[in-house]
Image (cartoon, rainbow, N blue to C red):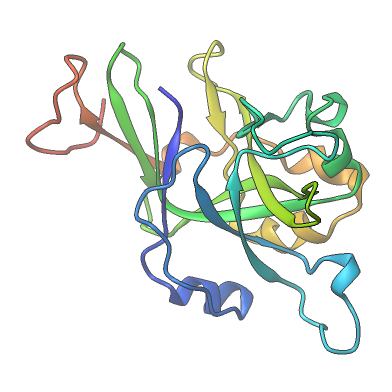
Length: 215
């Protein structure tokens, strides 16, 4: 199953972390849908009226490369951390330092068994900070369409599976503002013991009547 995520429900996190006021978002975002992401202010908009370190943007989850003839580009919601710097779809945003973060209460992903869905949250109850790339694509009509992708890495316990990159809280400012050559240093596996996995759909495809930590 494709991954999906639950945007944060408590809007004060945007104010506390980024001094931003952001509109409410849907309770679940799937690939191809609109999501809210945080980035450093766009270079073409900076000036005396924009001295903030962060700005929020809405965009499609599924990065639209600059060269795309239309926004209908498949399989760009995940950017592989090991190869994105050299992949055609992600090369330009990587080189331009178009990094972003998405705050989420939870990630929903495929479980260890076929048909099983697992909900992943932080053990301390704080939001997950998902690392991503963003891009602004110019349509044939001149409209700028914002989009983003989330970084993934091979799972530590299942190398044949992918896991979204979660940033440590102390890294977020540096991640958004660091030089391009330092990007890879932040793409690291998150400590498993700081995450909680809950099975929300069993291997038979039926929702579980009670949610509890997965073993």
